[in-house]
Length: 193
Image (cartoon, rainbow, N blue to C red; front, side, top):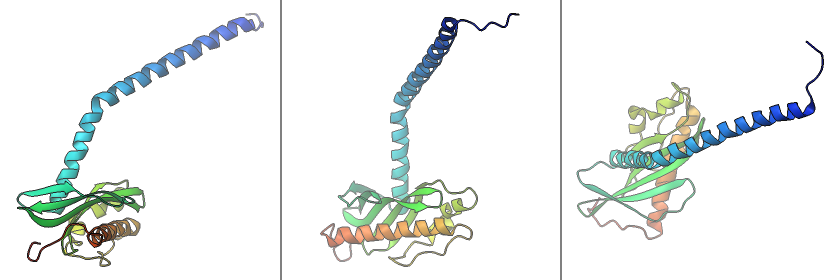
């Protein structure tokens, strides 16, 4: 074996081939990912909408509740829907985010026409498994039912940051509904709620 180095031209040709192969693999991967995204994005959006509708039904129970989007002030509020049953205002469903320990927590909060929580559902979070995820327990979330602004639930042991995030989210939903009604939102007739 000789100790000669290959000529520069051979080295460039070798590295050029490697770059072209790597570029080709990357291009094919990108095209496949774009194709899969194109084929699945409608299904993913449909599943997300189904989850949102199920959450609204869970936090605003009733036989034939109909939801209709209302104008809202963005910020942490992602969506606000008014809920009617038999033409009578039942309340509001507010979808919003609150900052938890592991990042944003997406909540759906039901609020009746009297400013009381009818239910809370967590749609998405990245909290620590086994600790922060305990706030997603129905027993914990049911403690918010009937509460008004400023009267939160006890924190989950070991998940204080997450618990406080849920509490802030519920308070933000109550404030969003109160602000909407103060600014001339839906009026509630006596005996309608």
